[in-house]
Image (cartoon, rainbow, N blue to C red):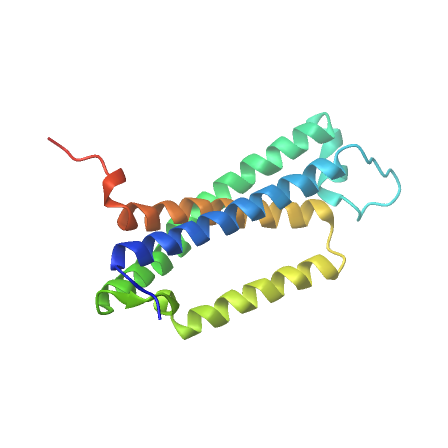
Length: 166
């Protein structure tokens, strides 16, 4: 059984959050970009955000930029008010473990169930026929929140990246 120090466990958790967040950002951008050159004038629910807002904003590209900016804001707010509490709880739980701790204890059992339910919700969102631009907005905001939250983990897990005041 592999045992590592607290700081490495926290850093590993931060890297996992970062990689999942980057994957979600990449997938959201891919969905949004693939929807841009496909105007569908009479079928409104293929890309409703792009179709409804494009006449008011000027173009589908402008709507895509607005979606990305809105997702960055919502991801930041989600990280600040929701994810940071979960992250701090996870960090304190890791710090309460004996040092060094087994790698499989990086997350608690309920947290593993939360991860499984989030993956299931992602598959459900993908397979229920939700519009691509709506899915892209969900993936972008969650992905940015996770990347932003991973910085909290990495701040605690990698003390050499902190700038020390003189």
